[in-house]
Length: 366
Image 1: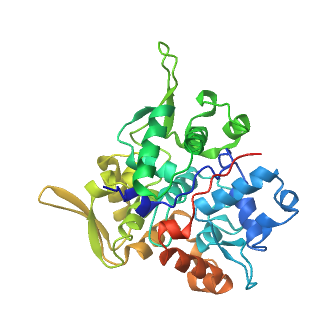
Image 2: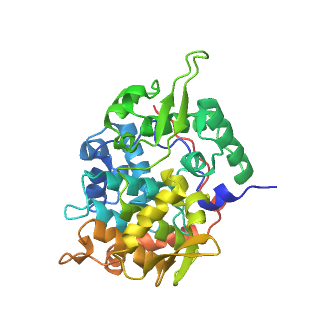
Image 3: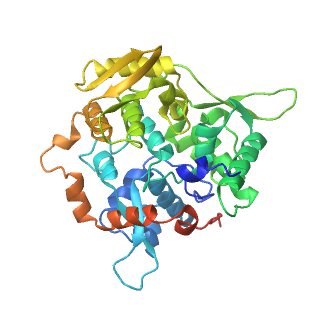
């Protein structure tokens, strides 16, 4: 029987990062270019415009899309089959010069991007199935490269029609460790590994650490758990409400047990336990009307008095001094009118099955 959890959450996209983890400055640079020129990643002078090598151009394009900062759709020409990139409202909110944190100087912004990378909703699925399996579906805390590859291969084979070569998934696993393991202890060896280790900000989150195995000589890693001192309460609350909004846009509630343990939920993405989620939500609820924690029949729940998606953004915007209240800041509707292809891209994903929407493509470095 097919396990559809991965197919429902993520598009079958493997090894498109060109072995590069996202580097410092890439997302801001890509956004600033894309908002002026949707064809920038396809341009002959893309390497000059973006200031990176050819393979890095492909990687920047991939990561911008994976973090939900761009969407891709056909260009204006009726016979165009090339996918152009259009900046999302979320990218405008975060990365513009007057945005929340254009240079990602706050660690809370990295936690937010990590959530966007893994989060999934109809019309905006995750583009990183290997990452999704690792953080959301893995039944273990400690793992070797072989363990994680085998787990991803199993989920891929159960969830999609067709499968990439195992080598592509191996590159994904190598990229996961390069992206999150502290530089001085991460495994290297793939092209560009040293530079990635020195430049990838997501290592600062401390989500994965190396576990030395002196007897076997085999490198293993471990997902860390516990209180996340760099994870702001409002980012936790935003993620919880954002997750709740995948099932309802009305007032309602969601149990803390689901938020902590359900595949796709913030507890698994951030590797935090129910008491840590409860503590963060209690502090936020004390300052946000329409948000409270209640207990009934021995179960604690987050209760929201209005649309959780809108409430989530109220909470998140407050973390960054109310960016949306700045004079001239565009609403979602205004941004959508500026980039109508965003709606077309979402509609295309919504009306297509995973297999129809995106073929399995394996990209390798030159």
